[in-house]
Amino acid sequence: MKKLIASCLIVIPLVAPFAAQAQAWPSKPVRWLVPYPAGGGSDFLARTIGQQLSAQIGQPVLVDNKPGGNTAIAASDLVRSAADGYTVLSADNGTLVFNPVLYKSLSYSPTKDLAPVTLMGRFPMILVVSPSVTAKDAKEFIAQAKAKADGINYASAGAGSPHHLAMELLKTEAGLKMIHAPYRGAAPALADVAGGQVPAMMVDLAAGAGFIKGGKVRPLAVASAKRLPQLPDVPTFAELGFKNVEAAALVGMVVPAATPADVVAALNKQVVAAIHAPDVHKKLIDFGVEPVGNTPAQFAELLKSESTRWHKLIRELNITLD
Image (cartoon, rainbow, N blue to C red):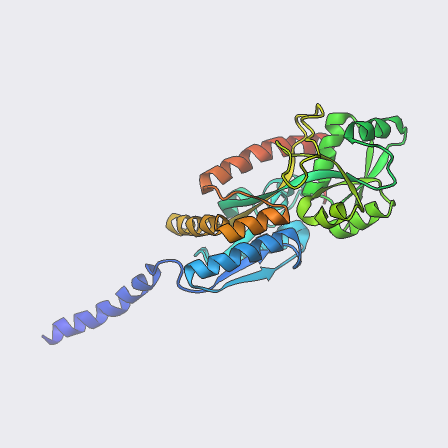
């Protein structure tokens, strides 16, 4: 009998760790890394979805803003975190598509270190111009730009941003000569476009809605497959004959690559449900986001096709940030 009790005492501590590991996600707070300062589009997306996610799973969802390094600082933080579903990252085109080809040396690998959970939303790009620009529409603006021997300047939210590369795409497709003026974020860039210091830029509706509604900048065309419901009178570039000019900031959720498949599936189920909760869905659309919420496999396939498309353009234009 003593031997039996002793053997049970030996077994108990061995079983306990396995029981803890088997505890279903979620059993503690979730830390949500955002690679931009508070107040921007990615931050709004994380906080809006995170609030609903917290209500669904019964655990706090804590947004942690880690800006810098063209999103690499937050991505590196994620890679160093435990692969257990309790640290997640909002990752956009810069993190997952552009950075690997823009930088010769990167502190993380999107394909080896990160696992996709879902694409949360698209922020379609819009060509906007200063009120001082005389062109009535995008075709006239492009014609005016072509007529300038020295080309024209354009602003962006930063080198390597979706805003920057969307304009480089238009520049290539329309055969324009344009000089890039990078800013530290969309807001200061928009302020200079509104003030006439720079004639144009590509911007997402989430960042540019206030400027557009206030008449401080004029939207000429959207780099989207269809017209935006918030700007029904603004044509797509495809309607103007530039079918390849389609660009958006794509913001998804990723986790460390070693995260168990069942945890990724549980995260995906809850985040997609949060995106499609009626109140959240409406808030995102009102803010200028196109809500998505797809499967990890669909998100991975999208990233693969986006990488093929954008890496070719970046290499052709020899754009580097090192």
